[in-house]
Length: 148
Image 1 (spheres, rainbow, N blue to C red):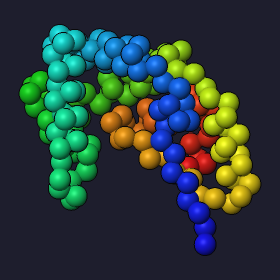
Image 2 (image 1 turned 45 degrees about the vertical axis):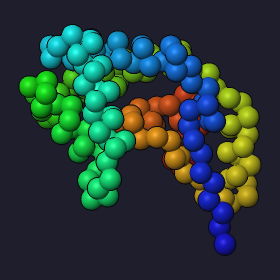
Image 3 (image 1 turned 180 degrees about the horizontal axis):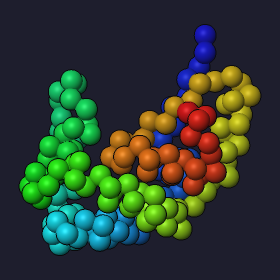
């Protein structure tokens, strides 16, 4: 039987200073979407949409769908209209947030040990960020997303 190890990302594989990370994240995202409203309005909509994701009890709906249904319409836009700006944010601005996290050297050692033991590994972090953000944070931890 193969053992599967489930890893959380924040404060397990990567030391995330949420007190500085989240405000910087919201500030950057608010600037990216400033054409839709104030930073407070954008942050409020994100908070609302994430809350709806967390409250979801319908396993047939993807969290991404729930977020989109609750984030974009109140701002008078669509996911498709915002996609180019968001892709640019996650490729150019989001990487700057790496300075707000710290690698945990023991994480890489543990992952290598699990690999040596032929264990499967998966990231089971709370899915509040898009996949690209999670992959980047895995890399910030000094790890390879392909290992999970």
